Length: 195
Ligand code: GDP
Image (cartoon, rainbow, N blue to C red):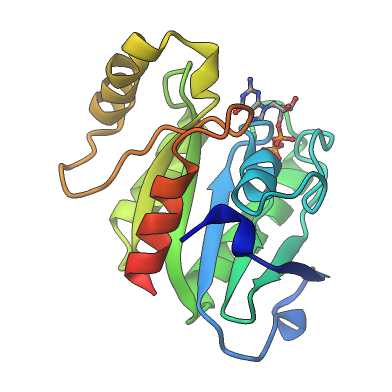
């Protein structure tokens, strides 16, 4: 699937489930800590500059953004988590939003869990991973910002993430760079296979 054929429209920034789209299309969901590069990968996959807003204040938004792609599927942008320095009340709101979407939404086809390739998974990453591995959801792990390390080191860094989280062989770990647009076609391939 060529990257430039996708037509994407922003549909809604939802704060409650009654606002979620009702046209019953499959949803590809992006999760990750604030600043992991979630907006950047959404834009890069869709070959758009500013569909999803890059450089948002970390942890500021708790909305769930829905983008409809080619009238065939949705990209769903869940709030970024980064709970270490967050006031408790905000943390509860954001984790509540993520939790209730992941637990109750029937249209989820794939969850794309983003982690920064340079860092060992944080406590928040671990919580998300544990949730996903114990759920029935299909998911892949996507280390972001691969351009920030030497190409030859990319497999080693992916292995650190794999070992730290104890990821079984059958779960794909696909490193990407949104800046360099590398490996995005592999993500599209996984999406097409699932749909
Ligand atoms: P979000 O908070 O997860 O939506 O993260 P953003 O997409 O806003 O990105 C956070 C920061 O990381 C921004 O300064 C981006 O320019 C930068 N960034 C995102 N993806 C990449 C990448 O693939 N490579 C590099 N070098 N920087 C990136």
